[in-house]
Amino acid sequence: MAGFSFFGEGLPEINLEELKGKLIVLEGTDGVGRSTHIGLLKQWLENHGHAVLDTGMTRSALAGKRLKQAKEGHTLGGITMSLFYATDFADRLENEIIPALRAGFIVLTDRYIYSLMARAIVRGADPEWLREVYGFALKPDAIFYLRLDINELVTRVLQSTGFDYWESGMDLHLGEDMYESFVRYQGWLLSEFDKMAETYGFEVIDASDPVEETFKTLRDRIEKVAKSNGS
Amino acid sequence: MSGGMKIYGKHRLPGRLFIVEGIDGSGKSTQLMLLQKWLVSEGYVTSFSEWNSSPLVRDVTKRGKKKQMLTPMTFSLIHATDFADRIEHGIIPPLKAGAIVLADRYIYTAFARDVVRGVSPKWVRDLYAFAVKPTVAFYFRTPLDVAMKRILGGRDAIKYYEAGMDIGLSENIEESFRLFQSRIIDEYEKMVDEFGLVAIDATRSIEEQQTEVRKIVSDALAGTRKSKVRRWLDLASLAKGSRK
Image (cartoon, rainbow over all chains, first blue to last red; front, side, top):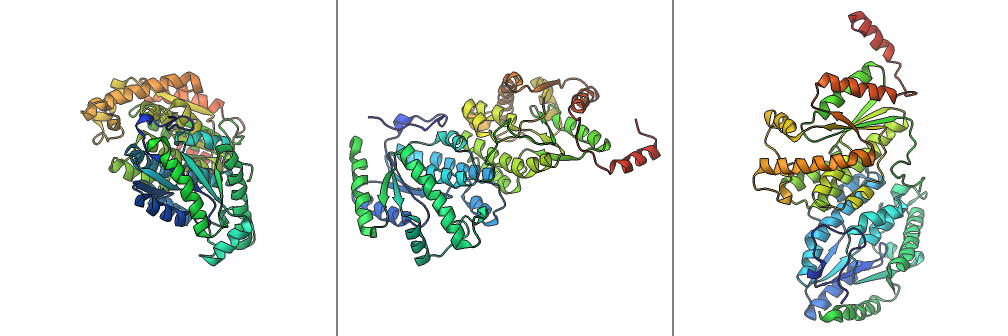
């Protein structure tokens, strides 16, 4: 079977044939319910006898804490921030994701390089440069893109936590207030995601359905991925 | 966004950027310090930038090194992050303002070290595509034995990553350091042609090297901004009778 490959110039000294698990990505803008679904899927997969690792951005042992602090102070420039995220991602890829795949786990990741690229692109980074930088990332077995249009997104956010500085892209000065800025920023991210959906073959999932419906759709598709190649 | 990201060679900035490269013990930092003294005495506006200097990123690098948790890839990326902060905050703004920026180590340090650690040469060159192309990049060419003598004579113990202990060249730290640095030299030598590094024979006297460096720099300075403070410096030097 096909097995794993890198997007571009890969990591040194990794034997891809050793990686037996599955890498499954949940992508989407803020507020689409990614973490809720990851929690549900993890439980369901474990009930069915699969070992699961769930991981997400800014959780690396190396850079996670400082990266969060850097965000709070928001004094770093766009390229610096992009590379800080890339460092965090590389640490998790090498120290969590790859070892788990080697051990035959299903890795569920809340966001992947696509979110990192989308955020960096709207902050002025060159898309071609980003693709080269993230050449060391593994191609996932499946990418599920939870999609909500901007109006539904606003409703969700108002119902939950309200607008926050970063989710509204306030560092970009796109609007007079958080609402305006949120709509423009998330709308912009959404259009970047839609472009990538085609380039990278995302499976688009309509996240406006009730949680149970969306979960069932995800579960059925992930079951197929988990079963492929005899794992 | 605002103009987007500029790629190596595409920046058009009025200032000048002079950088020094070479292995530890090549004497490059001394040469850069002497260059800065001279530029300041000539009334130029200078700004200094060194490797591992971004306060926010430095903590991560330090911790990663101390706990030996860096792989070749994360070693490469955290240094690129630090460098990006230097570029965005410490290098581009003064260059825009027309200053002379002096940098102790630049992207070539990363190219040499990361490639010796097994990172793809193409990947690491792409990674640093956002860097500003230096006006002149000096490479202080030093035989390993000369550099080793300078280092071992005058400082604390060699550090784990400096000796390339992470890639398992030798159990003995001094031996590992020697092997690692000799591979770094090989990478520098390859880059002399690739990037047009200006090689300075660093076995000569400090004064001879500095004379050569100053000549090359002064040829590249036409049209660069000088400070009005210079008049004061002139008066001060005249008073001392030391003006050349």
